[in-house]
Picture 1 (cartoon, helix red, strand yellow):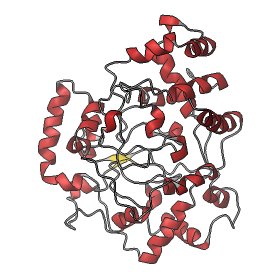
Picture 2: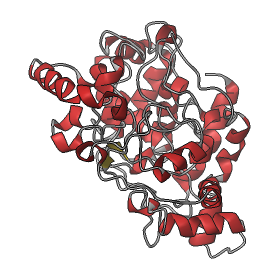
Picture 3: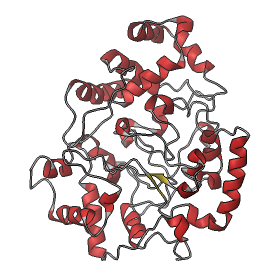
Picture 4: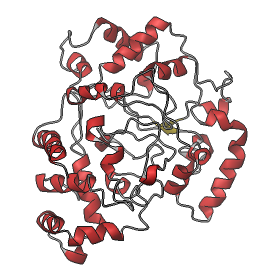
Length: 380
């Protein structure tokens, strides 16, 4: 791992582990069977950045969740081996420790379980199984020492259970609060937000109805309800095909299809959303409410990366989630999205408020984020 990455990771992981949670965040949930230790966190950071865990030796977890890009990749959808693209936008890992489920469709319940899927997905790291990971973990001298020190295991005693726990321990250090909003709302620093951001906050709570899903509690704010909603993204374009797609996927699940591989390999299957996991009709086209923390520096947006700017996101909601033809989504698919009827000035204020949710350690990412006017990247 390059020295500059080691130094960067050391800087961001030591403080969260050693100190209390940043302003605006609740106590960090840590599983009883995977307690945090500095040694385990350091091991997890090394694993997170190891490119040998891919068939080409070029892709690591950090490829799609890059530290200098607020732990995402700033792409419409992520690129894996040989520049292959999937169907989903890479969500930031920042504050993922607080999520009640992982992935856009919530198909895994924990960071430990989540970490094992990209290794095997054919459009991500594309390993045939986890054996190559274990071979490296069991034979690399540095890993041998680290796994012995952290877990008291060596050789064949090292399993994916230990690998996934170390990666998850590192990811649980990637937390951030202390944004201008936190200083304003929880810290009582009334000059921390601009007048436009203060107006936007009022709209967020009231006319914009944003807080209904991007929740704020009395003493903290994760800006997510941990639930799944259909807001008319993606599924709008395939409404007429949804019944057939849903039936075909249920039949495929009965035959044992791998949900992770299916949703990342086919765009139309991806648009089924939470339904692909639960098989519940009322979850067709539903995706997890993402956190809004650091949202201004992690474009593009939505599960498919189809909206490039925060203003586009606000306009989508303001219009009530229309499809490309300007037609409202069928009521049974839209989840009851209603137009907001906000003015352009109010939309500007809401966007300004979103910019107040950037934590100081990630403010520099704005310099590398795509220009709001840049064309959306297209892949053949």
